[in-house]
Length: 70
Image 1 (cartoon, one colour):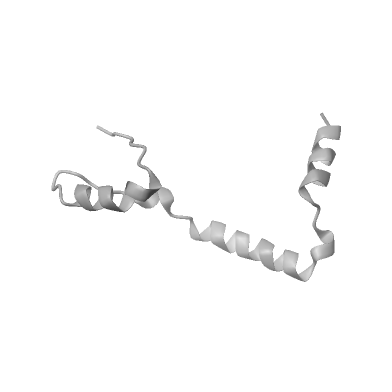
Image 2: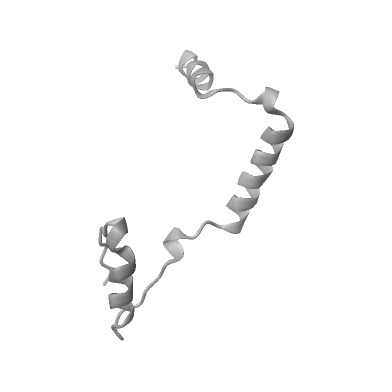
């Protein structure tokens, strides 16, 4: 059985400590982990932007470009 709970951020640590004390509960925090390949890609893109800021397009311009093709 799988149960999904919506825990407020300010209660998460408290809830997690309670649950970890229950021997029949398995805590799987992998859902929040960012894969290493994704971190590498983000860091690569940030470095590219830092080295070539003129090649970036602002959000509004990007949206205008996307919407003209619709």
